Image 1: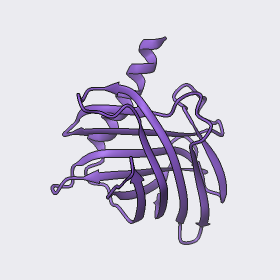
Image 2 (image 1 turned 180 degrees about the horizontal axis):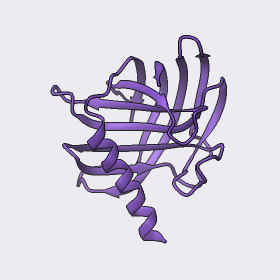
Image 3 (image 1 turned 180 degrees about the vertical axis):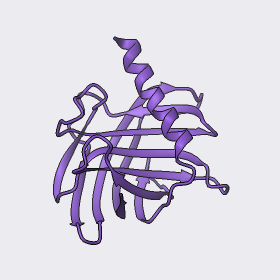
Image 4 (image 1 turned 90 degrees about the vertical axis):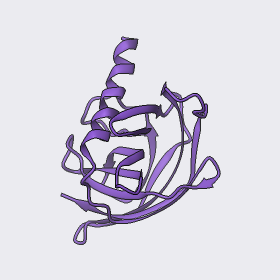
Length: 172
């Protein structure tokens, strides 16, 4: 069972790194990552699990447009509200929990993968506005993630994302 908990998130991360180089980014993000400004791009798409939910991807890119870091939110409701984040890899696809994953790597190589703690009760994502006609979404977030797979010698023991705010459009 422990093996499945490690392998499944790793496969998800590898898939995410290998399939998004041609993504279209639109919107703004401001966030502190371990106390320093984190420069990113953002994209939101309809969830493949539920058409009424959204996936939000916040990525850093190198000058060639390749993804170096990603912070992903899964199964986000397309409605205004304050939502606690949860560890969700073992949850049914139609549940109400919103998942989160942070990973870094380069050219399909995963260096580090971080997840929320199963005991976390402080991390959240808040949708402050959702315009269904324009398909625009705004919100805030704060979270702390812990290593699931730690490949870098200098990888931090935890990563704190604070004062996060975003505005993006949902692509169908």
